[in-house]
Length: 283
Length: 252
Image (cartoon, rainbow over all chains, first blue to last red; front, side):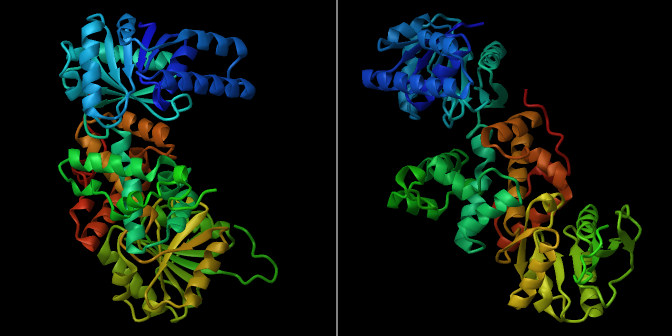
């Protein structure tokens, strides 16, 4: 199995995946074009490891070893040494295509190229490489350290061997892999759409208030959070963008139609917890 | 069955409808110390839950009547109309209304002001809260009586507007439907869809497991009610679900 993992993008997801991989014993090259991003990411990882030491979920030697296994890199060519590269850059197809085109030039022919995309086509990303059979989706969930799930997504030319390697890697990282084909939203982002979409429509139709819908979902349905509480946590803009993307990718399938309430909130800048105001006010 | 507390009025309830809703409500009512008489649709079907007796129709003195049919409009209409004829006008009728709106049921009775819709689907009574939708003519008193009724079972009540699918059934059945579309399109295996939704979104059940818990016929009834009620393609039933199975093809 691959023991050297390259991670591209030192944002929230890239940093989280780097931490998970290092704790699982992988050697990690963490790349970002920005030195500041790398520095901030390493600080976040250190802080998070300190917190997990205090909680007792990680021992001091484990945390120290994990940190030494993460090597921040600003030279893209250093990714060529990795057996598995997980791209976690911004969710922009043009950017990802450029990264994969460049990776194709420097990695070993058998190296696995994974993308952490949540919404873009694996097939499309893979089509730019000489070896599309080695390109696979490995969709981690935020926060990557805590969330157990990894969606392993096969593009139309991904090989079974690549899928198996991605599966073994996810398992070695302590994650639960599930498998799906390369379709808009994969499993979670697609199947969850009605949770938000129907809630927004009910609010718009006056069936119940956001507070009542959330209360019913929690106390009658057993959901941990109601749809409006969850949208506020995710970010109204993020949720709206995912909905729009899936709606468009499924050629305006009415089940995925976004709701005007979401758009109005994005326009107003009331994006949920991160702006202090969404469906609920926050301190 | 619990004995009524001293000084507390004995509550008796008549329940008619389909299995397993009848059993679930009968057990909950008996557990709350109520006298329960019930009738399954079609007469003999269903196992008699502890603390209940069978009756062909509601006695005039019952405190409340519950009609728990989602999957057959004709049977529900017969049950509701029969309760309305038999019971004094002030006796509340609490009726499963996730698939058929209270507004539609109101046209079947002489006293729609006593009709209170409930979001009754199998397994939902396990929750701490019951969602109700009063008819348009129901007064505050009818709502208070329904709250009191569920209060005896230690349930909170949430009052919502009478719209197709109400709140939780609408969300749940659309989740089951979406997962059924995904399964039928071979996007992933059944186990992967359920695992993904439990681990990726912390749902208490995977949507396909939930479909089996609720019952596919019940899910279809709610979806059909929404499709005809809203007149929108959005609520069409997934082909797999329409065939009455979640035995989807393997994706890999």
